[in-house]
Amino acid sequence: MLKIYIQGLKDGVYDIDISSPVSQIPGMYDEFFGNVDFSGKLRILGKRYAVTGKAVCKAKLICDLTLSEFIEEISVDFKSSYLAVEHISSLGVDITDNNLNEHFIKDDEKYINISEDVSEELAVNLPMKRITPDFRGKSFEEIYPEFTQPKFESRKKKISDGEVDDRWAPLKELKFKKN
Image (cartoon, rainbow, N blue to C red; front, top):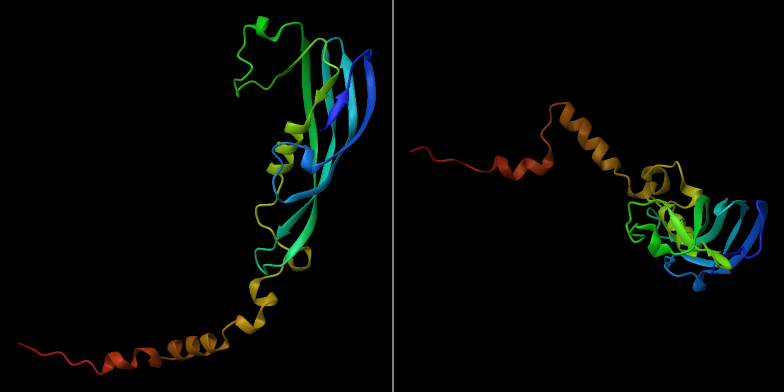
């Protein structure tokens, strides 16, 4: 769990450097392994806690072009704020409402648990197109020249020269009867 100890802290700015194994963070995708490292700042002003920093974790991905496995470090900038309240139910707000961008914690909490928020941010930052760093920016023809079709290029020339493509030759054999 990625928990930040807050009990007894006064107003000010504090450095945060925490780490947790992926297996201890609920909701982490299977691609992630090792530890999730978080470093940043905790700012306290009254009952408001602001957490900013960077979360880093390694992910094991499969290349979309080569189907080879590779490891990429996923890092995200993280910002979140929390409000300490005496009774959450006394706010008159449904805290399960997903439209709210507020995080509420109890006044007497010892920790702020950022595990769920960090896991969501890391999941959102997984690349959509997963390409091994060795092949980024290269076309399919550059990676697999043996699968490009030089025969196709010669056929294109024949067609443009006015010759009939040999694939259509059986159609010439067809005879139509007139009634």
